[in-house]
Length: 116
Image 1 (tube, rainbow, N blue to C red):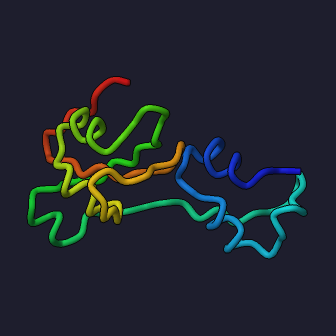
Image 2 (spheres, rainbow, N blue to C red):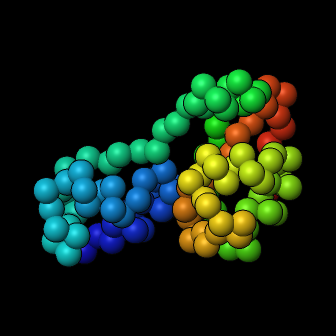
């Protein structure tokens, strides 16, 4: 049996989700097996008009790891807490984030991505 969470977070590095895989395919999650043809919807995003107006040039997808939180991620990437929270639909100051959740990081033109 294939687990949709492992497929979404492992093979597709968090660029899909279990619910997206289940929603896009006619198979029941408990009946998945090797050899089935699956549709895999991937996260893809471009900056909105307002984000572009605020200087965002592109969005980086980041897979949440153990120990990450909004504050340390925005510090690591040198980006705004508020703008990053908004881009990801967070309404709380310290949102609950699950391992391998894909987050959007708003990047400026000369943005340097930190080494892990």
